[in-house]
Image (cartoon, rainbow, N blue to C red; front, top):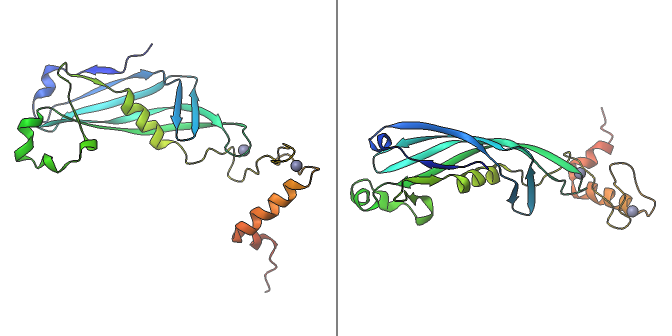
Length: 187
Ligand SMILES: [Zn+2]
Ligand SMILES: [Zn+2]
């Protein structure tokens, strides 16, 4: 079991101090919108924690390989994640309030450093991976999907029910550039 809680050492409470932390984290399953990515191997992560005066800035990377079902044909898709970890923890919210214009920040743009000085990186790592996830996981750009009528994988050929062929033509109609493939240009 990997631990992603980091204890901020005393020396980091001086202005402009910075420290790097790293490790690995068993993500297991990542829910990214409608898609569930399974991570067989732990995700590698690092963060640099910097003291900006009234806050600790947490910035780093989380990388690993997740797999998911293709949005069209349901075959396995693997994706190499390389997400940016970003966090901002106010150290003394009451003190930092007046002089730095920190009051301009919305509630969702920062956290407050817990009294025990332990930051749990799990939500930051998951957020970094979710933001990096593709909008739609596809086994390949032009995956044709499966026929909704007979279940034939249309990447492997058209089906006998005829529905798959209709879909292919429908796809072309929806994409004006595909039609250019058939267009005979005159010299
Ligand atoms: Zn596919
Ligand atoms: Zn079919």
